[in-house]
Length: 341
Ligand code: F0G
Image (cartoon, rainbow, N blue to C red; front, side):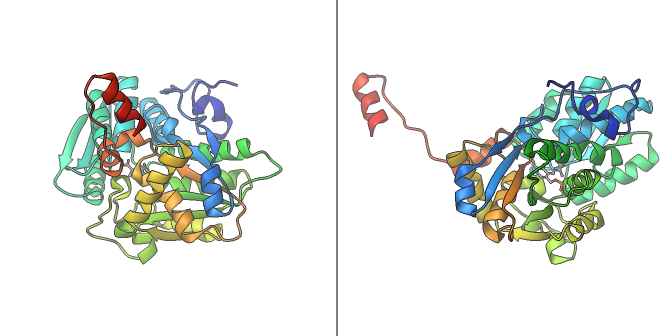
């Protein structure tokens, strides 16, 4: 069945009436693919939820269709967010689609190239803050107190409403008789883990929520704010998550856990997924798989790892982590040698 986006697909479970304006790029309905090589390595049955298949290449589109539709319904002429990159790209696309202004505040020099290109191409005002994500979010929260600009970070409840639909899709794809036992998910600002848990709870399901943070940006693991978060996974380089309490409630309520994974473990999972599963995600997304491999999923037999963003978002890290090209003269001999070597 084809859908005109997730508001259309799940309107009965979302805060939108039939005659409300809908800003959509037909997001959602992403693939849930089995991962045989990973399953063997992890010792359980693993599926990958490919959120990079959303229109702007990340799960953010789920929340953004709802947040921007609500902003338009309320008469907003501009939307804004702080972002490590993906929210910025998604905001920019949906603002363009809606015909309203978009502004994004990103940490200078710390967002992946693809995300920056997206935000700029869609015509958002891109502000490079000489500071980190946490500072950007604090500033943008203050700014929106003063000016009539809609804040569409995941502090906006409509973002979570949209993102919870990924849990609905996982549940539908697995079928009612054999639900999943655990969900592995990267955690940054902690909106997504909160949203999945909300979605599963609405269905009466209770899979274990296993959230993973990068070791250099792991406030929820340490139980305290991290003032200078650092990780190769720029998407989740966050030291003071906005949805801190909600994320911990999801973990506690599901008998789950929040654990840290090193950059090395993240990059290992990143390369493994690309080379062995044919799935190219961005480093931040690979934290879910790195976490499963490093910490296991307890006695869970059926596990879904959420791959939150597409690998093309961050070509720089990909090139640094992969083999080099083979230079070749334009003769048959040379090509033969190059190919068969
Ligand atoms: N994975 C990717 C690819 C992300 O971009 C993010 C967050 C996360 C995971 C973590 O999700 O914040 O809900 O816990 N990116 C935000 C952004 C912060 O600005 O794009 P979360």
